Length: 92
Image 1 (tube, rainbow, N blue to C red):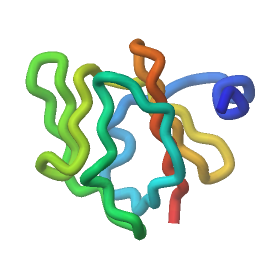
Image 2 (image 1 turned 90 degrees about the vertical axis):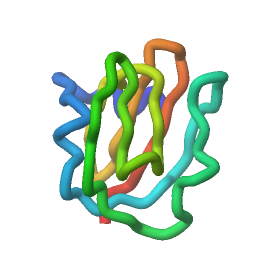
Image 3 (image 1 turned 135 degrees about the vertical axis):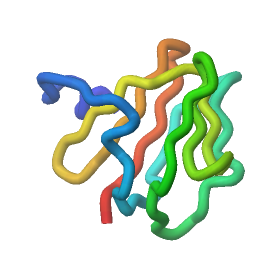
Image 4 (image 1 turned 45 degrees about the vertical axis):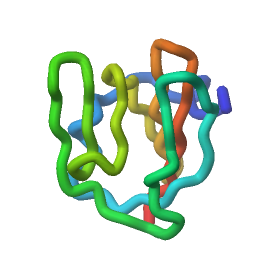
């Protein structure tokens, strides 16, 4: 999991994912990250909303308690949270 971070020089904000078609790859779970509603196939990230510290993708499909650091390398997107949780997507 550290491969993405080790080879990435800069990070992006979650808003950079708008319009991207992605597929869930894996996650490092924790108390604040639930992937129960994430589709098994590819889906497009159509909306990103911020409510205080909370970030909501696709009108509640993915709800994050705080804004993650977003890193991309070789078609793999990593969302890294301050809580130690991680969420990985592959671009389609």
